[in-house]
Length: 431
Ligand code: DLL
Image (cartoon, rainbow, N blue to C red; front, side, top):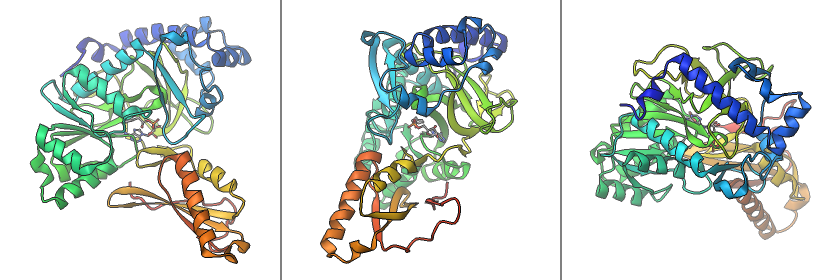
């Protein structure tokens, strides 16, 4: 089933022509922004000289750091009055990465989501329960408007409150859910604990994304719930979800190439790799008025699947994300950088020299456990002072990373001393 058959099955040549037209428009718009004006000038880039898709490789890469540097609006290409919404990347507060949208950008995004959902066989007859966070995170509102566009009955239930989620499923006959893989497994347990066999709820499809997971987890969720699960990939910098989505064949994600130009690069050298080789995904957004982003380093590792898909769509597929080239952790769908935790800890005078971040999963929910060595003198005082200190660290961490951590205070020398490159993060989750 196609949402826009002509665009989804467009011949490669025509697609590349469309990409080039859109790229040139995006570059001209980018060149008016303070950030790209400087980048292009520093690198001697004249955007009017970009006359083939291949020229793209000569342009500099853009990073998350660049987005932070240009906070709040150094990459905005339209007047303020044209902007109707912003989203921000999860896991950071204050100077995080903020993305802006015009009304057309939002309409186009909704269209892309409707296309993605329809590629899995969802129609206006479906009841869609959206269990992703509504707010600055793109997972909630992103799918919401696309599902409405498609004509589904949308239940904007957002995250958490499992019993309410189950009640909604029962009362309104939910057929399609949008959920993180870890929450899907947890919720299956809660459903069973409440005496319900999850397949009896009648959910047919799940869209799983926002965090890394394996094919094994996908199969497990399909078995627990008796449904078909589809992988969904996206990132806030490229609107949010809807960058790449599995079709009914569930065999790699079609990356919507009329909105995004994809490249795979060697993360160490920046050199472009041929189709089929694994490397870092680099994306250029060629369909956003408010904020064009050129050659964005996603830090996600994948490969392009060069073979044609049986569904007839000509947009190439990418494989499930294998990992990241930076140290970003995704805890319960929230992006957390170990450096943020370190910044908090190092601003607490009582904290000593060593700490460790341990991630595990309990009842299928991610937990983050921060183990911190203090200076010796802290253990000479009373226990109340220690507890107050622990609470202070928890509060500060929570404010910055938005995830509730468990904090353990330790005497000096309790953690293994670092020999060479410190191993600060121990990830015990199986993904
Ligand atoms: O997670 C957008 C999203 C929402 C995607 C809902 C899918 C569903 P960010 O918070 O900016 O945006 O996080 C983006 O999450 O660079 C990947 O590392 C990771 N990620 C997203 N989807 C997948 C997936 C949203 N299907 C970062 N598999 C990305 C593996 C994923 N990793």
